[in-house]
Image (cartoon, rainbow, N blue to C red):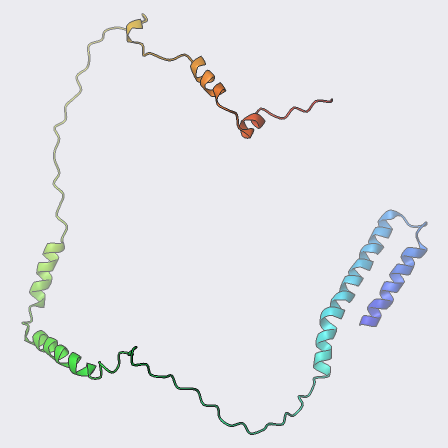
Length: 192
């Protein structure tokens, strides 16, 4: 396969070199594309397929290794330190502590009267959500205000006090401008 691809590559390259002056650009472009595709296929086969093929054809036989008898290795036992007890020497009879307690619990449960049905109904009554008390609000019908007529006169006495707009602009002009504020207006580049 590799030899066949190499032969096709040489043939395409020679046809491109021989037809330099006679072919139009579209034909040259098509031949160059074919040449590139063939080179890509050849590279892929060299990198992947031939490496796998060589591993399958000639697997290396492992050389027999002479084994010498080895003495078993003993793991060093951890040294016991009396200053740091592991807690086991004080709790040797943990079963003796837990058994009487579990027996007492079992006896108490066995002596309890079977009142589960009554307890269940009582718990259900306690857990039922109480209906929320609804408070009835008497509706009052809005009383229509007497028609005063539209007064188109301006009432200057009830106007709120506003500060002039120029005050805000002066306050902002005193602050140093950041780079973003300067660039918001745009960048002007002159010819000189």
